Picture 1: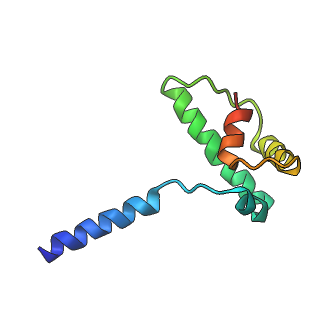
Picture 2: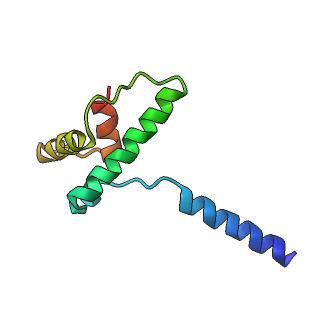
Length: 92
C-alpha cells in the first residue's frame, strides 16, 4: 500500500516537472537574451511538431532572434500578453 502511494506521488511529481512552463511579461523582461532565444526556439519547435502532424495554419518564417526582437518591441509599445500569445499572433 505504502509503495503504491509512493509510486503515485512520484508519478505526480514527474508529471508536474514535465509540464510546460508559462511566463509573463515581467519574467520575459527579466530573462537574458540567450534565455529568450531559447524560449522562442521551444515555441518554434512546438509549431514545427504541429505542422508535421497536419498543421494549424501557422507558419514559422523567421528566426528565433527575429521573434525575440518582435516580442521585445511589442512590450516596449505596452503590450501585456504572455510571450506565447504574442508569438502565436506573430507566427500567423
